[in-house]
Image (cartoon, rainbow, N blue to C red; front, top):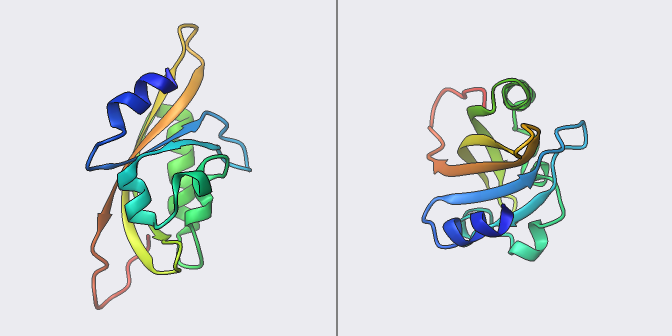
Length: 129
């Protein structure tokens, strides 16, 4: 299944990150990140694969949003949220993330695919992200 996803999304203009379905406290493990994800985050694929997407989070990443995303993934197979993430150079950016859980033939979660798009950080009143 992963090989098929890599072929489909390798050249997408939308950032795509594929993880395993380990939604424990340690978080899932990144299995693939396309070129758009590399451009958005500043990390090379080799720096992301094998690590948790939490590597992109930091001081202003909302714990409530992280928990809501994790809960929705566990319960509904689809979720969407905006998180404050951080590039490799430490620059913050808001990221709209839509996650789909892909199941194997037995119905068990196998992979999660995140479609990510950067959103402008709005000036003025801070919003929880």
